[in-house]
Length: 339
Image (tube, rainbow, N blue to C red; front, side):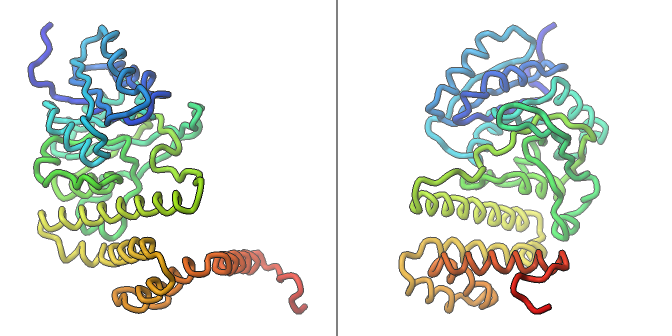
């Protein structure tokens, strides 16, 4: 039987610096039942041998799927990696897989069936996951929200669903309806769900279809020095800002800017302030920023500035406040208090 020239499904396998897991994860990707599917094994310019492992897995493969291996010319990050792969894919339904997770053999078949059950109307299909520790040990099921309970962007703005992007399959039209992702976007999960709800809707398969590894590239690392901590924090702030700005741009595309500005305005102001605060180098700059920023409550921005100016005392105060709250909840009296 000849494979179709334009496959209905493309699996987008994204890898970066994951040599320790890439082989087993890529083999699980190629072991998907059904199809044949188009599979793109893509490495975002790793330096640890990940790309070479993917090449070897593809060379050894003898199954029905159509497999391509590619590598970014330079490390471009999650957002641009998605853009590049969507541009290369030929399928109508795109299934994402990460090189540190493992998809069960019938994951694609079940998500494809769920999409077909909607008459191919839905733009995103999610699922639950099985919690997997860094060493590969499996634990309980982590359930995500049923995306069918979010029929409109108004519902999304009122309460964002709990989702895990590693489970997502989405339509090609979802990406062509909007501009490409901002290259700085790292947390694409909610962006993709918002886009889907603004279009054909989203559904959740009521089964765990991915072994989802704890931690990953977004986990907080151990820092060698304060400067390393600052660089990491600034990078996280940039990612958060990119996500909020992407959502606002997407909202403008579908005509709900006012709703999203009300919903995301405070988050944008807070993240922008914290990013600027992290970028200061003197106490005078921090005081000036705290007093000159008008969009946020003065007490909140003052506390954030004081945390940088006097880190040890403010941490001690925060610890005492937490302990006091715990004591009040337990009904105990602080040591040395009146009886």
